[in-house]
Length: 442
Image (cartoon, rainbow, N blue to C red; front, side, top):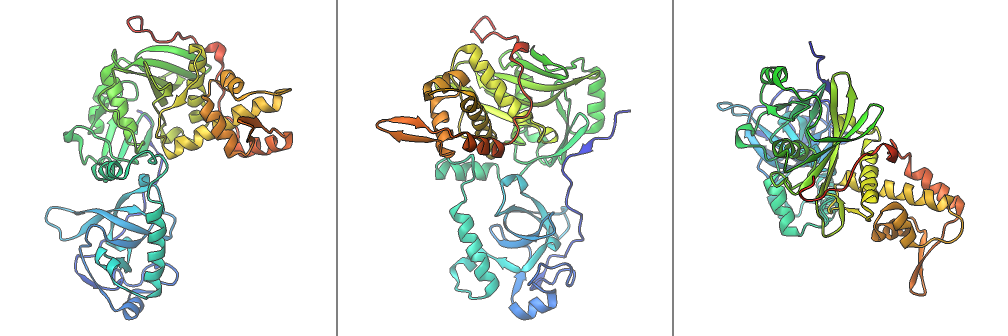
């Protein structure tokens, strides 16, 4: 019997529902656990004296109790009945302070209805202390609405993207021994929409609606590793190169899976022009997918990576840094400099900045004599623009008399290296067996 799947991210505690009605203040389950300064239901009803009509409208803002036990401002994105005949609703909300990956369905009893602000309220002059505070929060949030990873979307494209992907259609997945809560919408075929949980074969990445279907599939599936060529093996770590044209269904399924954890990803079906590099942990049962990156077979812009993902169950183990380093080892084999395709996700941007910092500062620390930006780029396969932006962010470069000059004080380098953290798993280039892709030659 396989072990029960490990839960990667705990759900919020289930709570009792409140009936749909006209509610005065926060009159839901009496005075149960209100944020500091909000008081109980009756007290707040007397303070505000406002009535809130349920169900709440889409666009409403309200404070909701989150998994940290504190209340945070949310915006209602969507609503739905709890069942076909029940009057009660639940609400899909976006936490205004957080990334969209934390959007979720909540019920009324998690809300402090004293803090409700409708879109109509935005046009009113309410001088109450609570409302004033939330308006200031809202203004700050609106000003910084474009999240990291979305900077290169224009306003219209961003609105279209968020409208199309605003509600997660799959809540969780089971993959191998792990169960993972999803982060974002993914365009699975319509028959899989609103399935609370999908079950993936960890070797061929076929997905099913029910555990029994997966069990039957696993008895028949003869794969024990990703299709394609194993190009790297170092102890229990392997990398496989999978051609999107030769293994189209596998790569499309990988894209469906990846989109559940990547907000900006747009590649779903057009996989023929890409190569996929699958990172695996290997044991006696097979090679288990940890993460991957993809790259175009021929990139006119010099991109050496299109998308990158470490699955949530394997994050914080150095695998993301390994994948980035691996992409640059491939660029070195190609005798090219490379850069990741933009826009990067917020987590991807942090990982790249850390990688560039560690690699460049390690060279500067060991190097004796002068060194140019071009030489740093040639040594690392990092594009010159990325070298310059990294050193500028660290205030290690100045522009004098028409050229960039690197200022590398050893103590400053040590301080920045310490701040950048550890480099994660290292890539042993001697164990990479790979030749660059050639059309017709694989």
